[in-house]
Image 1 (cartoon, rainbow, N blue to C red):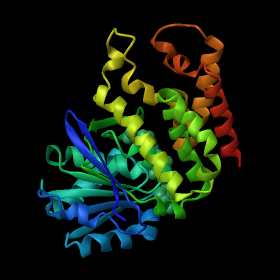
Image 2 (image 1 turned 90 degrees about the vertical axis):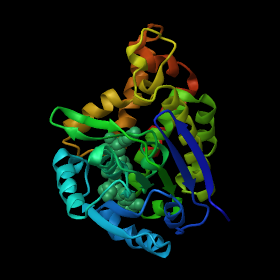
Image 3 (image 1 turned 45 degrees about the vertical axis):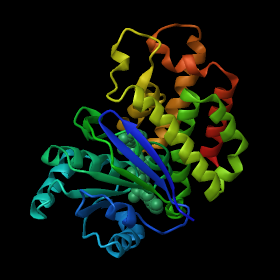
Image 4 (image 1 turned 180 degrees about the vertical axis):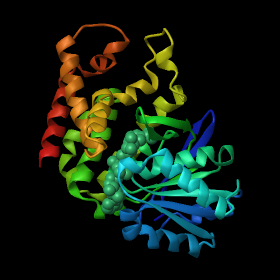
Length: 325
Ligand SMILES: NC(=O)c1ccc[n+]([C@@H]2O[C@H](COP(=O)([O-])OP(=O)(O)OC[C@H]3O[C@@H](n4cnc5c(N)ncnc54)[C@H](O)[C@@H]3O)[C@@H](O)[C@H]2O)c1
C-alpha cells in the first residue's frame, strides 16, 4: 500500500508529511526524489540510533542516497548551543553544503537541535524529520520552530526553518517506553483542547486504541494533530499574532497552552522531567486556573477562552488517568 502524503504550504516554505502505511519502508525513495539533495547527514541520539539507525540508513542506501551519521547523547540538557557548535565542526569536516540535507531521527529533542543546526548552517540547508516519539509525531515535527535551550531558559535560542519532509512510521513507537509514549499524549490533548473540541471527543472515544498503540488509530491521531497544528502555523507563521492588538487572532500562542507552567517545571527539574509530562501538569494547572478566573477577558486568559467547556475538563481527567496508568 502506498504511504499517505499530506502537503503543507506555508509562506516561507513547504513541508511534505508522509505517513507510512507499511512498517520499516524508510524515507529513502522520498529523499532520493528531491532534486536538490545529494546526500544526507543523519542526526540521532545514542538511544534511538542503537534501535533504529541501521534500518533508516539502509533505506537511504537502497535508494542510492549517500549517508553519514552524527550521534548526540540523549536528554534535553543536550539540546544546547554547545552540542550545536560540536555539530557545526562535524559539518565542516564533512564539507556539508546546501545540497546536503540533515535528517533528524529521534524525538523532539533531536528534531529541534537538528532543525536549528540546519537552519543556521550556511544560513539554511534542507532538513528532514523522522520523528520517533509520539510527541514528535503529533507536534514538534511540524511548524519549523527549532532551537536549543539557552542559559536563561527553554528554547530561548532558535530560528524558524520548516523541514522539507516529515517521514512518520508508527512502528517506530514500538520501542518507546510506555511513560514516554503517554507523555506525548499531552501535546495531542493540547491541540484538541485549544483548537478542536470534536477532536477531544475523538480522543475519549478512541482511548483504548490509543493506549494499545493500534497503528490505524495512531495514523488518524497523527494526521488530525498535524492538520490542527498546520492551520495555526499557517495563520501565524512567525508567532507575531500575540503582539497585535486584535484579540480575535490567537495564533501560535494557542500552541503554548500548558507550556508556561510546563516549561517552568521542566527547567526547575533541570530537564530531568520529560517535556510531555510537564506539559500535562501545566495543562491541568492552567485549565484549573482558567476555570477559577473564569469570565476574565483578554489575552492573559487565552487558555480559559478554550477551556470552559466540560469536555476540556473531561480531557484533563483522561490525561491524568493515562499518565497514572
Ligand atoms: N519544535 C516544536 O514545535 C516543539 C513542540 C513540542 C515539543 N518540542 C520539544 O520536544 C522535546 C521533547 O521531545 P520528546 O518528548 O520526543 O523527548 P526526547 O526527544 O528527549 O525523547 C525522549 C526519550 O525517548 C528516547 N526515544 C526516542 N524515540 C525512541 C524510540 N522510538 N524508542 C525508544 N526510545 C526512544 C530518546 O532517546 C529520549 O531518551 C523538548 O525539547 C521540547 O521542547 C518542540
